[in-house]
Length: 219
Image (cartoon, rainbow, N blue to C red):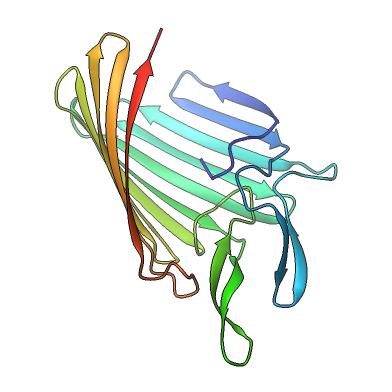
């Protein structure tokens, strides 16, 4: 839900009979989902890592309340490497039996760091590559918002759309249709668009399209 996925973890989940559930987890973190390594930033060498190297683990905790109308959920994580935190809140609403909507907001306390690729005439930083330097909250800037919808057109075809915008002024949109060809076999064509407008990034003013097709067989 935050960015890093490959980690060892110990977790406990409580599920009540009234739609309430909670989870707490201790995580080791990992380096595979972030820009781990040593970098020279502003004349100083920094080591970026997502995996803990001491006894203090990353801590994740979440709450969820779900009913027939939808759900409200929140999750927060403490990054013990950077001594920073990140959190998200999400609302899901079942408008009808066919249409469901969701919106989510996120905030992080970790400040972005950039690896310089362009310098001013005096040698100071101008633009660069934003480094994913935390296991949690990998979006650009302090905050980010997401929203989406799912529409069940038929028993076999489900349409999905998602929009996202972050504090660093990056916009992204994705749309797909999941079609069940036969029971247990689903084909999902998807298209995505991203526009970067981060004034500190060398991607400023650029955009990209991406397409994919997923074949899923369930047994």
